[in-house]
Length: 172
Image 1 (cartoon, rainbow, N blue to C red):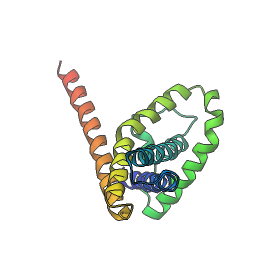
Image 2 (cartoon, rainbow, N blue to C red; image 1 turned 120 degrees about the vertical axis):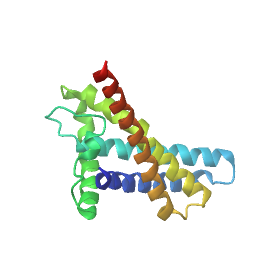
Image 3 (cartoon, rainbow, N blue to C red; image 1 turned 90 degrees about the horizontal axis):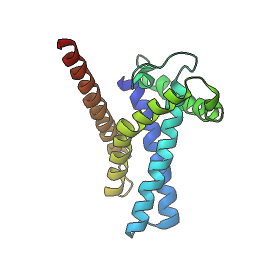
Image 4 (cartoon, one colour; image 1 turned 30 degrees about the horizontal axis):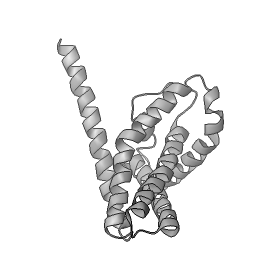
């Protein structure tokens, strides 16, 4: 799952950087309003890019698996191929969103995507934005691994909790 997650992390951090850059140009970063807007715009653009990528990774004709099945697609590919596929999946997601409501499993696709976005990707985005803000936007080399670690930690905690819950139910 990590190679496919790295592609989303790169897209997430790059789009977060774009959002923070837009905010710093428009509002500056010397007061609390500029810093708050940098988080909001960076988080918004990164969330949209991540949501589009997750939507683009679904095979819309098949049933959806668990919460991280969209992240596991392409986990056996090399980094460059996976990165290219991530950007392609983001474009597919952007073009799919207008017709998403027509699909029979649209509600489940949207809720699963939002679940992934709220849990793992929020940890990644907030970690990356905080590192970039603390080091005055000169730490992309540090924000990507820390964002990946935060997202992986959240996914691991969620999956461990699900496994423990399933084991308890089996024992009863």
